[in-house]
Length: 367
Image 1 (cartoon, rainbow, N blue to C red):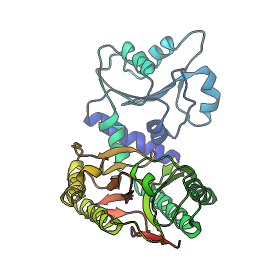
Image 2 (image 1 turned 30 degrees about the vertical axis):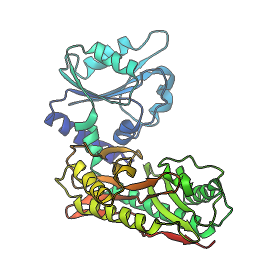
Image 3 (image 1 turned 180 degrees about the horizontal axis):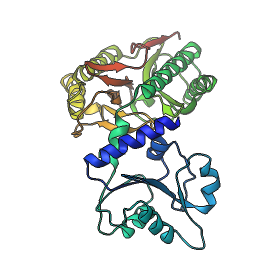
Image 4 (image 1 turned 90 degrees about the vertical axis):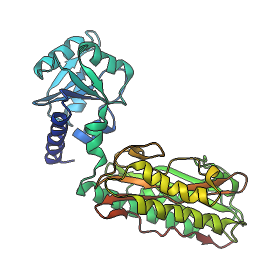
């Protein structure tokens, strides 16, 4: 990430802080810090926290990590050692940022509880929130450069899926199929993150653990894959059938595809996330399969594979132009097969743009 982009993101965060009357934002090692500052300190029991105020920023930094982290940022460090502890350094940092009497703080919801307590104990008068309306809100709306990276990653996933289809055959195990996918990702400079391959009845488990089940004629195969490249992820699910499809497959695939289409039609700026889930779920319920759609319709994606916005039946998040999320309804029939069709979309003013170029139609593998 360039220094210019870091400066732009800090400026955008400070604008959000002003709009939400936030005195200081505190981030631990993780996705928020990576997104904002492109800093990835070692995460352990030692408190390593970034503080951003309206006028300054700095790190509460374990002395043990200072030298390595210094290569990633030029922000000031307030170092502490194991023999002294972090309390004095924290007091100095808060004073330097002029937030010792902060009334409103935002804490990274992913930081360790003891690190969060360290901050709240030092600022007992401050009202605490998490990052949803500051860093989280900024991360949900992707910039052009982020979109371009996500689009490239989607195209890599397309290639990995097609590579698996080209080699799949009866007798091959789920693990062997996953190995093809992972190898293709690696060949395209993407770090494999997951490769769910669920053959036959295994596909009825949405998060099946890919194993040694051999593919056989008549199997419907769920294939959910993703990898990371340039700091962002991919995620897609497609279906393959070995030989002749199992009884009832075409009908169920058609219902799931119609649910995808309904969700795509519902996704517009200004719509609440649950309305997208409602649209997909209504199609599946009306077809008689409501009890077999057992998860949410989607999740946001970016630096993390799962991040806000979450497309759930209860979500009140208002969708905005530039948000990136999955649409992935599914139907899971125990003992028979499962079908999930998943695409990542970016929301535009006139609706969602699908990042993958790979059709959602079933891929037929010769038996």
